[in-house]
Amino acid sequence: MSPILEVENLKVRYAGATSDAVRGISFTLGRERLGIVGESGSGKSTVGRALLKLLPGATISADRLRFEDIDLNGLSERQMLSVRGRRMSMILQDPKFSLNPIRRVGDQVAETYLRHFDVSRSAARERALAMLAAVKIRDPERVYGQYPHEISGGMGQRVMIAMMLLADPDLVIADEPTSALDVTVRLQVLDILDGLVRERGIGLIMISHDLNLVRNFCDRVLIMYAGRVVETLSAADLDHAEHPYTRGLLAAQPRIGGPRRPLAVLDRKPDWLEEKA
Amino acid sequence: MPFHSLRIGRAAGQAGSIAVTLLGLLMLTFFIGRMMPADPVRAMVGEDATRETYEQVYRALGLDRPLWEQFFYYLGDVATGNFGTSIRTGQPVIKDILHVMPATIELATFAILIGALLGIPMGVLAAVNKERWPDHVIRVLSLMGHSMPIFWTGMIALIVFYAHLGLVGGSGRMDQFYIGLVDERTGFLLIDSLMAGEMDVFWSALNHLILPASLLGYSSAAYITRMTRSFMLDQLGQEYVTTARVKGLSRAQTIWLHAFGNIRVQLVTIVALAYGSLLEGAVLIETVFAWPGFGQYLTSNLIIGDMNAVMTCVLIVGVIFIGLNLFSDLLYRFFDPRTR
Image (cartoon, rainbow over all chains, first blue to last red; front, top):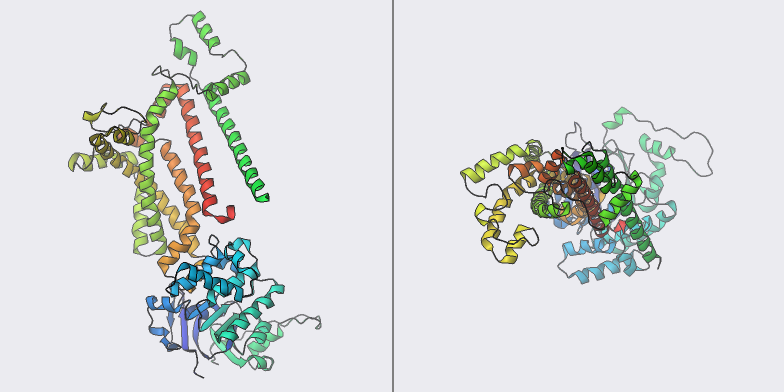
């Protein structure tokens, strides 16, 4: 199986920063679900945005940045416009902020299709309605005409998924897709995303700080620390992680019904900053 | 439907708040009239009048009644459109104001159009190119518009564009030659001349209007640009802008199809306020350009203490602002689904 995405020595530096936010990471992605886990500031979201080249002012460099038949490294902004949304898209964290408050949600979904296919508005509308049904929205016609403030967070995130999968991309990056949702609707939303990704054979990168979520929904996990990948392992082997940082993350998780003692505190050794996985 | 009763309730609430504001405004103008050191009786009867004449007029004006009773008389007068007589011209105040107001409205409307059409795109351009050269150029231009005194730019502009280049008309609302040629029907010279079919007068009026309107427009544009820039920068940092980019929209599409819609409400507010302050009259520019407008009228009456005229002017300015606020409230509903 040829990989969808090959990344070699990716580095990102924000404008005006004195050091890199992502310091040379490498990974490949097949038609699988890859989790990227790390604490805040580890650079995991930056990786997602760098792949879409959506980091205004930042410098992105890589020895190799291959996405299917496209060399992302040499692509101009103009060429990126036909990649974003169509070939690669991203589900953002909180529908309260990631949907435009003054436009009907259905029109926002249909817009993805209109940008990439030469179709009439009514055809795009039909597509969007079908996609809203596919993310298990019961009354798509009604929801289509609603504004973001009129729908719930779970519903908003389904709209987001519909919007980002509508043009049938090959790779979807989900950046903390459920951390703004109530615990009760998290699983529903994840199931919908998971079902669609499997059914359509889409590659998924799930960026999260939630180890259990990644364990359940991903095939493979990258553990990031301070802009580097410290460990890569399959989700099933997470409990057998070798790197002390990963072990530390696992130990810092509370367990329901477990013994009530203070949780382990993360240890951060300076020599982890320089090692490579 | 609960929807409808909600809407009616809101309209009633709004009408109520307008009524209260108006009443407050009337109280304010009434007390301005009473507190001012100017003596309306003396102004009418003259310095040499006998004590009897003075007393007689004093009573005729109702000044011997208690203050609250006088206030009710004042309310009744205002309600029937009687705003008193101007001491200076001997005409009903309202007639004088109806004569000067169209000149100011014409000037202010052109100025705000120029200001908004120039200021909004410049503000967006500056925000999009933050900290790059277009932003710097626009910021300098807007700072200049803010800080140059308008009477000075007015005079310089007259010297350059009128005296030297002869591109525009000089002071006044039209060339001397045309004065009195067109009947005053609406008071708006551009409309009156068009209605009379006098194209020469129309062009002359437009020619005289363009320079003062551009100068006022430039100084409102300076303000509108700065505000638009900061509103836009606010929106460009929002997540929905990222969403639009992820979908494959270009920067320009994202700005005009997504971000701009979200600053319209704020823009309406500041443009309406800028328009209001232009309608209040631009005394300096009206003086430099010998423009017979509201600002000059108010100022000259303040100086000679013609209280009926001043009170009415204050009332009109208040009503203008209430009206503009109401108008922008209505536009909010139109622009922002969350307020419906």
